Image 1: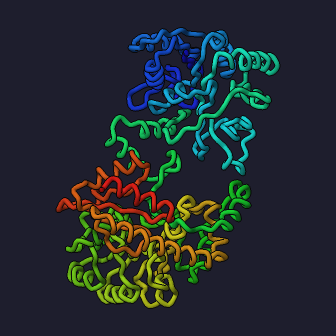
Image 2 (image 1 turned 30 degrees about the vertical axis):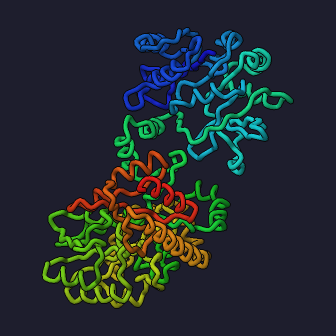
Image 3 (image 1 turned 90 degrees about the horizontal axis):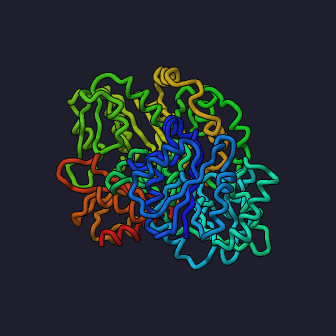
Length: 604
């Protein structure tokens, strides 16, 4: 058997990284793609490796000569790489296909060790390596029938998003038997090139072969092995984290992304906090049906979006400002404050991070659960001279909850002390108590110094459209905030969500009931793990202390790397006595069961 690598392309989308180097010389964590591929091929004891070169070909040849590759290497030159696609590169090497069984791969891939060995060891002679389609993938996909038969090759221009559940993505690694190349591939390659020219892709030939009664090629499915195709700098960034040189670096790189984890194959995110049971299918379908309009039309300005939010929450539009997520509004609010600000820690760090450190007055509960009451806050902050008090309720990450009546008592105390009270109720809808929100005209009128922040992204499970609201009777504050943000600070998808949200209130109530039930079950299961001490929570997440000596960092690392489950390591939030804490988002029951199983296996 031989290896055949197509490495003639220019890799224009990688910009300056390929300005003077061929694409396969781009490095992932200090090691070039070509070096990785050649070292893995070298382990297979192949007869030779054929490399088709083109752009910066001599530089690539010279570089490969410095590598300790034992397998003989031969080169095929594509002198018109800038005028042809990869069908021409493969056609230049077709005589080699006729001489031996071949592992064919493209040079912009990075993949786990063992992937090629699994392909070689498979007794089937001719295979296309595939993986279940995910949203980050691009290019040719296939449909698979019984016994891994290939029903159809589907190029990108014929991709149908309504059929994605049936699709498998070609990894661009193949095993061709010598016989298959002689009887099928090379004859069809010659005919296809003659008919349609050289500006095509070699997979188009496989598409034609697949319609034969006996195409002689099967699909081989990956089973969780990690791979990535690197076409641009974002692909390169993700590949660097997927194939980090050590576990600690990989965890740090993943944590530093702060989202976008749908780009990671098969990852379940228990770190970031959303509503797993909302929005309902009908709402999603309604948004899909209006996608073209929303994509191509400007959203309304702030005045209209304030009207929509005011209608949904039953308040006056002069009392609400809509933000590009609550984070935009937190920044505007906190950076405009004067005087000392009271905080509870541990907490959601966006508030203290947007305030002057020298103005912070911090209350840290002195009990293992970090629990506190309204009375605790009044006792601690009395006489401290704070001008503003920030309360996250339920708090993040602890899940500590202060009942609505007690929050109103705290608001009365703040009013008497001339303290402005900011209540972030992004998670309050998940509490067991009914009618928890403070967003009510009667409450606002009675407490003009009260400011309420709410992340719609978190409560309503739509973080991708970035919505949040700030509510206050203080019309000057609200008007001033509206002037600080851009006139089109939310997009058309966010506006449309606000427009239709009112129709789905019953679905939202049902979703909240489901997540409360899922939280109860999750807490029961977590409490059955001796290595964890579970802290009571009224939010859509649960904080737990690790009591068996395992560090939060180590547990987070093992959960990610072994089970592809991403949990929140609270080492950076909770410092002091060496206790170790994690935070776990409440997802649906199926996902929660995977979390429990992994925790039991690691912590047993």
